[in-house]
Image (cartoon, rainbow, N blue to C red; front, side, top):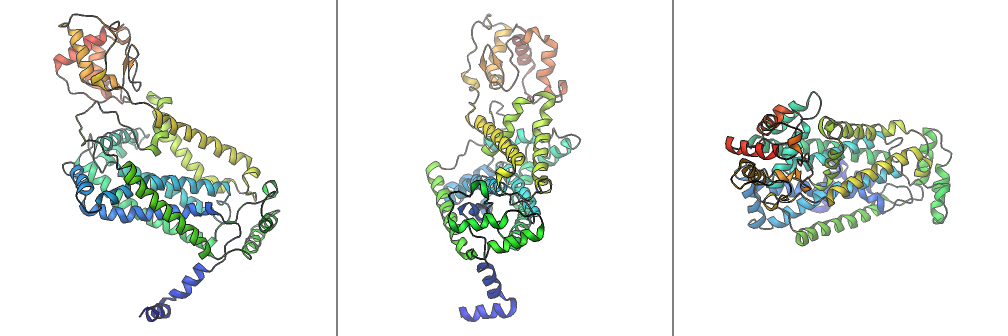
Length: 480
């Protein structure tokens, strides 16, 4: 029956002919294992889609049941732990592979003619992958998911003109709730996949149409290469027009392997990645925190690792300058990536012969890696319940309003963000001498409504009684 089915498809769709043309086409000689990064990214995206479909069968997108449904998947559904673990760890690996693939394309100048739009499609694919990461980590509805989304939505609001609209679009209310979760679920499972499939199809079709770019081998790096690779450098040296490039590219494929030979490398890499995500699932498990608690203002959120560099930049631009790391720098970065093939239009491919582009890319990558490292190694602020203020900071009777305010300060977790006498967090201003800078009335008004006093404030609103507010104000006013 199988040969008959193949002939049936061949007669109607030329399936065998198309498959033969696809697999037996020549590719340039010198294609290495680094060229497997693109197919590795595609493989991980396919894993995300398959495991995501199975997870969606049991997941309930409501604040009351989301956390329990995730626990049910992990603990009771057959192979649920494995499916969820593969989905979770492949989500991180797809970011790694996508970035490495982009770096490989940049280093070999594969964004140049005739692959400009292929590069642009790849940039938007990377943006979609980051969008999946942002919309996905609210779905478990644990503490990290909830509070990281609160911070992310607050940062979205900083966008000029359209910030409040985007915040309402994302949160659908003053704080994350049922509509927020349902919108994130719809974005994660419906809207973003639609754009992903479209852009990935365009990207892959362009790669098939234009062919895999040849390695940029030229005089500065020719020494030590195999004799069979030398002709590549000679074929692409001295090119000054599109016609010359096309002739050189066709010449580079004459002695090149068939595409199916390279597919064997892709298959090996895909198998290794599958083994890796399964190993990570069993070795590291699936990090999950406690159920989301909107009333727990003591929790200090941290984003997923691939957003560390963005959140670290917030420390360098406080107050009104926060729009720079949240909007301006990401927008300029995306614009630079999109415009790269239309600005760097020369006929040099090797990084050494593109000093300006190479230097700027190296500097940008160094900054991103440094900020990511800082974000990964930054210690969490001390837990509010364990903070012990130095006795030299304040001394008073146990029943005095100021001493009662000191207890309110600790109970409300103010030390997670603020420090007094060197004890506490660094996210907010140092309060060691706040009493000498503000009078009690302004302190009381700011605590009661931070955004009313300062629209740019990131301090959350605290629900405390008037007595607790008076005591906390008296305590802060005494710090001089």
